[in-house]
Every structure is written in C-alpha cells, then in structure tokens.
Image 1 (cartoon, rainbow, N blue to C red):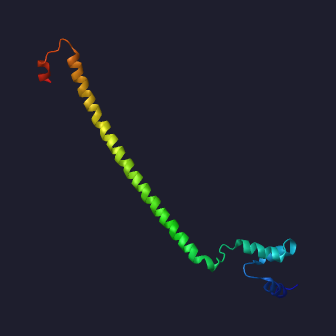
Image 2: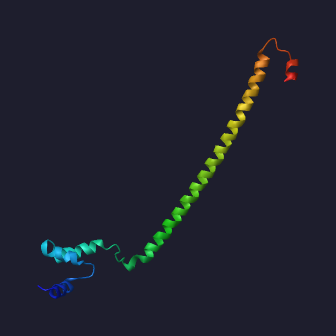
Image 3: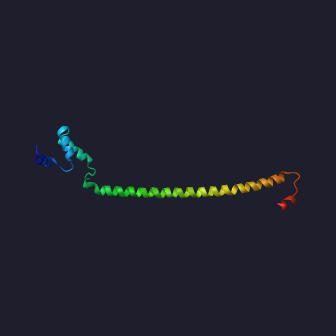
Length: 122
C-alpha cells in the first residue's frame, strides 16, 4: 500500500471528532460504533427540550428569590448575634470594675477596727 492510498483510505474513514490514531486502533480492537459512542459520551452539551424553557425560567427565578431570602435572614441573624456579643463584651468589661470596687468597700466595712476617716483618704 502506497502513501497516497493510505491517505485516501484515512480520509474516507475520518469522521468529525475521530483522530487518525483512533482509526488505527479500530483495526485492532474497536469497532466504528464503539468510537461513535465514545464521542457521544464526550459531548458535554446536550440539547434541552424547548417545551420546558418557561417552566425552567420560573423555577430559576424562584430559586434565586429563595437564595436572596436566605441571605437576608442570615444577615439579620448575624446582626442580632453581633449586637448580643457587643452587649456581653461591654458588660464583661464593665463588671470587673464594679466587683473590684465592691470588694474594696466590703473589705473596709467588714473590718471592725475600720474608721470612716480612712475612706476620705482614698
């Protein structure tokens, strides 16, 4: 078989998406239909039926609306959480000062030898 005959044979057998190296393998192990099935499996995009486009569009818009509502509720939840957290932090930072002052005065008043004049010195 000459080079020209081989090229002619390859051009006859070549279909869109089939490489010449696949044709050589075809002679050994695969049938033509197997290669076509393999090509169909590789296709990523499939044609969607045009009947359901309106239904799909409404479903998409409903899902987008649900996503927005969920985002809004999560933002509100976070706002409430953040407010509560800042309140607790403020309460925590202000409480030790009050307890320290109470401890000082309770210590002073609990002492029987304590004189009220000593408080004036503080």
